[in-house]
Image 1 (cartoon, rainbow, N blue to C red):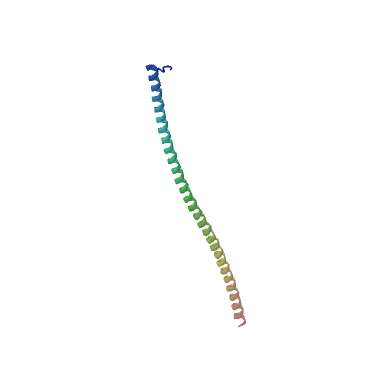
Image 2 (cartoon, rainbow, N blue to C red):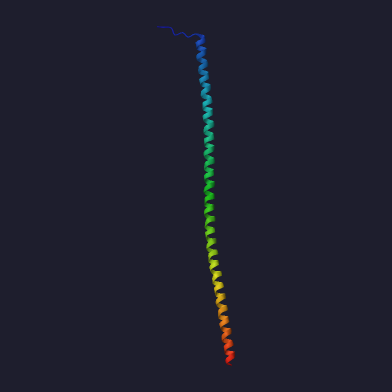
Length: 109
C-alpha cells in the first residue's frame, strides 16, 4: 500500500480553496435570493400596473360611452331646435295668411 501523505502546505492550500469555494457559494446564494426578491417585487409592480391600466381602460370606455350618449342627445336637441324653428316659420306664415284673409274680409264687409 502506498502512503497517501499530504504536506501541511498542500493541506492548507486545499483548505483555503475549500473555504473560498464555500464563501463564493454563499455570495452566489445571497445574490440569487436578492435577484429573486427583486423579480418578485417587479412582478408585483407589473401586476399592479396592469390592474390600474385595466381600471383606466374601463373608465375610458365608460367616458367614451357617455360622450356618445351626449353627442346623440346634442344631435337630438339640434333636431328639436330645427323643428322648433320650422314650426315658428310655419306659424308666422299662417299668421300672415290669416291677416291677409282678415284684411280681405274687412274689404268685403
